[in-house]
Figure 1 (cartoon, rainbow, N blue to C red):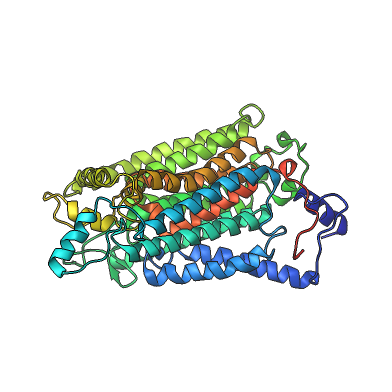
Figure 2: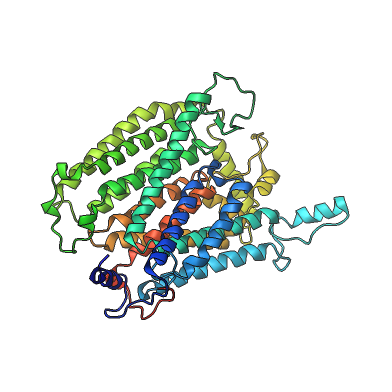
Length: 503
């Protein structure tokens, strides 16, 4: 990279003209350290889906430690130009986000202490004292060990968000995050296809998904490396949005063009259809096949919403200037409709084959009863399974440890006030991504739009399932929210930095 171009890049990132960031390392060592940090971050993040979605203690616990260790060099500027530097435009929203997250953690820890007042589960401790002769002092958290695990995963998501926010200030790194998401989705689907052929998709590794007797001729829904086909469909849907975002991105020579670049000069399809985009289209078809094999109704619907959100935001203000993109959008919409019709039979059959299609409604009704018993203090983070076991209706014999609706489960565990804090921690960065999608220049608007649309899939899907509670999905969503946050603040909104340590 030439000296003049390096200076222009520094100025674009917010450094004052004429002020060169301090570089204490030789350039080759600095570049090697940056590449190593970025590569490890993307690699660990995207391989998190391989060990059963990282929903086992032996999977997510080492990942949390790895992200905690990686956050230290990133905080000192390794892998990013400014480290964790904060621009003036993002001071207030970032402060609000930090306050909400700190309040959420404080509330969760308070539930685990004897300082909290009596809640709806106080009678459990009284009954235990009658039976055992002694019991712990009544606290809202009925499962402190699960609360600890939930807090650790939440802290890991916060670190991932901050690292992605720092690393993905660079637009090349933001695009590499999209590439990593696509590669991870392809790997998960490829494994699902292999298991579909070898074990009829009834195994994930050596884990048998069927709870009762298994016949070799029995077929199961494809779930890739996930135990649950719905979480698999959600993850594949996120990869679909990522590959579509790459299809809409420009080539490197166009990315470096000035903002006055005339997009109408390069609208021919032959110029757009490169070898790289052919590979992306092939990946898109593979991912769509995996989505159909999962037969997930909510996963398919959430993916359609995410893809439509991406297309509509990309076409905002460009219907007349880019008629070629309009044609691509409507062709894609037609493909979604055809795919929906093809998949409709499998989705209807899945609903018809269910032993009790209304069981989830009954679970939600029981959850609302638990909320009514302790509306303000909740039952403790991670305590849904114990609360449900106490209130489980006789009509449902099978035990259940999930509400199949993340918002409802959070309200059971944290109460109304604590749930509002948890919702704000997710929705505030999502809204910032939407802000960037609406305000970015045309040259790079696909990055914040992709972050918003991709995060929309698990957020919407989690209203009727628990995809966001899968560590692998939660980690990826945190990274894309961090990327969208970083890209939401354009170069005109960044303030100069006189000096950045480590540069």
